[in-house]
Each structure stands twice: as C-alpha cells, then as structure tokens.
Image (cartoon, rainbow, N blue to C red; front, side, top):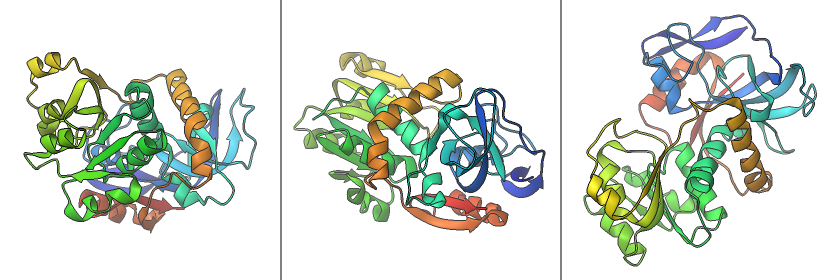
Length: 323
C-alpha cells in the first residue's frame, strides 16, 4: 500500500509498505482523509515520538475512513462503518487502530472534517475535564489557543461550563479570531504583562485551570496567572522543552502541575479517555457545535508540501490530506 514516510530529514514522500493486519481488538480502516499534527513534524525532523520514528517511518496520528477489516473480538463495528480515529501510521491507504480509539462518523459529517477531530477532542477533553478537573463557572486559560487543538480547547471549555475563557496567541491576526471559538479574552503570551491581564480579568483571583501548550519561557508566567489551588496541565512545549521554574511560587499558590501525554498510556487508558470524551462531547460534535476550521486540503501525493505549510506556521486550523 502507499503511505507517507520519512524520506530524509524534514522531508516526506510517498512510499510502498506492507498493508498492516489488525490484531485482536483492532480494526483496519480504509483511509479517506488524514489530518496533520505538529508531532508529525518532530518525526520528520528525525525525532522519536513514542514508538514512531526513524527513516522510513510512516507518519500520522489521526484519520477518517471506512472499516475494512475486523480483528478478533471486535463487535462494536461492522465492515463499511464510517469512522474517525487516532492511530499510529495514520497517513496511509490503510491504518490499524485499537477499536476503542474509533468513533462512528455522524451522518452529514464528511471525511475531511472528521479527520480533524480525534486528537483534539481526546487530548483537550482529557486535559480540561479529567486532568484539569474543571468545574462549572471556573476560569480557563488556553496557551497556544490558535493551534487546532487549542481552538478545540476553547470550545470544550466553554461547552463544559467555564465562566471565563482566555486564549493566547503570539500572532495578532489569529489572536483576533479566538473569540469566534469561545474566547472571552485574547492575550499575547509574549507580552510581559499578559499574566497580570489574566489576573485582572478574573477580578484578581487568578485563573483556575491553565492548559499549557507552551511551557519553556511561559512556565513561571503561568504560575503568576494561576489562582491559589489552580491547576496547570502541561500538554505541549512549543516554547521550549526546558525553562525556569519558580518552586516557591508553585508552593505558595499550592498549584497542581500535571503533565499529560498519550505516548506512555496503555490501550486501556486511551479507551477510557475516548469513552469519557464521547459521553461528554459527541452529541455536541454531531450537532455541529464543536468543529475545527480546515486551513487547507492537499492530495495525498503532495504531503511534503502540506508539511512545509505547517512548518512555516502559515496556517490557522487544520491541514488535511485526502486519499
């Protein structure tokens, strides 16, 4: 089958690989569309992302298509079902995933739009609701809110009852659009005064839940913006893998600082994450209340150009490949 593989450092290419076989509890999906994620750029740059990496590795984390084959013990899906899912090696003609990661696509939702949803829904429901323990009426701040998962985080926070939703972006044009996706206030995380502005917006209390996709330079400012007994959930590190950390401020505010990733989670843990997300969010997804903009769609053979577009940080929303 054809798949998008790591051809060279920072270069993707179409390659011929063996078609994967579904194991017990797995399904094989005939992929119709796949969405790009920044983790794919890490793999293309030569880094390992969980079990994926190295020359010839198939890239991709999420896709949508039709169930083409069932592994032993799978009863919740049938051949031909339209599904969206997170999966390793998702940007290929066929992808295999645990059946617990797959979700039926609602009538009226196309494959391209469906492919944009699995990672964002799973990641941000888990970060905001489970790790962040959001309670109705609390304030939420999303760092890096103009990314695809960030835009979904704004929507989830609002949908789950947050009282005040703040988003950050360093790009003024994208920052101006955050209110379209649920932000009550948009800030620039490079502005030295952003943490004080966030505190002022909460009446001086500080933010209850901060979803951090930046870390690096933003770690201490996040704690300055946080409320006493606030929760900071470390989802991404777009601003750097390391940075200064004010341990005294952390202790003074009694902040819960939680790190999350799917790379070290078991299949059972991921199934539970998807189960909880589906219960809370899928009715809203099916009603069109939770959705992501598609910045640009590329044909499968132009994957390298699609990744170059993402690497240039020239997009707003998701980039999708179609097969």
